Amino acid sequence: NNMGVRGNAASWFASYLEGRTQMVEISYTKNNTSYRVTSTPLPLSRGVPQGSVLGPVLFILLTNDLPNYLQELSQVLMYADDTVLLIANKQVQELEIASFIALNTAKQYCNQNDLVLNDHKTQQLNFGRRTIEFTGLPEVDLDNKAKYLGVTIDDKLTWTPHIDKICSKLNSCIYVLKRLKATNTQEITRI
Image (cartoon, rainbow, N blue to C red; front, side):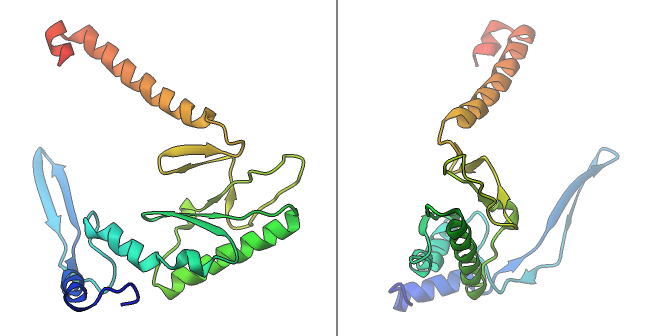
């Protein structure tokens, strides 16, 4: 409603989300026979269907006010369900306090909107001078690199870790191609 979605559009979204169930299916093989076990369907009271086209759109609609919620504390970068808080301060102690307040405010926002912040995916990087001792937030890993939108960013803002990761993947692919070339005819290898 706050986003201007009313009337037929709101009813359409409601019908898309209401009355859904979820279940778990496990497939396994035993004695060369395949089995599939499915749980009893349970009603869903929140969330969106995983892998759905509307899932990211609904998440964006739900969280579009997060930057305003944190505007006095940090700059917020959002893409789909990835969020980055950028906090700058020349004084280390003030930076640590501002980071603590911004993260806790973001957690408070998540609680108010029935969202869960994934602590295992939460990281912090320090892009500042190395002569300053920055300990960061106690409950969040202080890393020297992080992956954001498929790009590995390091604390020196170089391309080195990203290029290293790509080279490693390419080396694996080249190894597989060499093995295929050695065991197949040229015609099959071309395919």
